[in-house]
Image 1 (cartoon, helix red, strand yellow):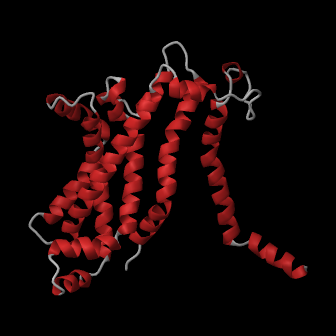
Image 2: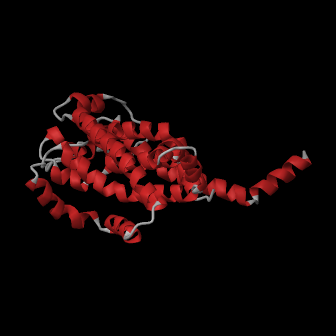
Image 3: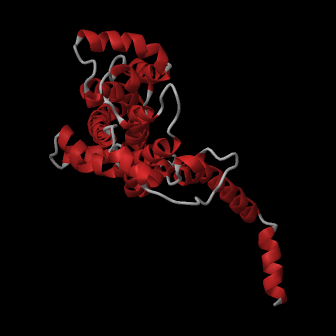
Length: 285
């Protein structure tokens, strides 16, 4: 018994205990807004405007969710548009980034370093500085109020980061793998596709998760390039529940919760690839 108390005291005074407490506090702080939004989403309009906050609804209701999905606002269409935009963006970014980053990592060509710097520099520009030029380009191509405009925008915004991240994975793989594949009769593309690409699977998973989330949450270009519900995505569609006269808080929070669910499912499914990819990218093989 004394030994158990002694070990407990040692654990409480250890760095592991302090780290655990800090982590738990961070989790509580991170989850608190989500819990508050969910609680508000199942409240009635009358309860929302009470002069005090209630964490347990007096009369829970799912009417805000029913209204968000089947009411005047085509919110279900916004969710489908977001899935199309984020999914297409993720697929295209993975294909382009995996090939481009391999070229930057393995081949030495004139202007290679400058090109890599230009890729990173394009991502460092504030998105708001690109808003008007991008609107003019989309307008000249007659892409305003289309999903294609949002897809191209998200590809441009996410591709530089994906190239930079995957290049680190390629750099960590010894060139002996490429040479061995070439000696065995593979072409350069076959060596890339059959040998090198499978080795960076965790990195591709990390890029997929981050690209999907960035595309799903993008708002600035979504509200600028979308004029009608046909091309509106979920990040901009939430504003349907905000009017000049008042804010429909339960419906707004219900829409916010519905907007989180698809992205959360995607992250949960690829979570192991995200963690493994980010950790592996920080280690030298």
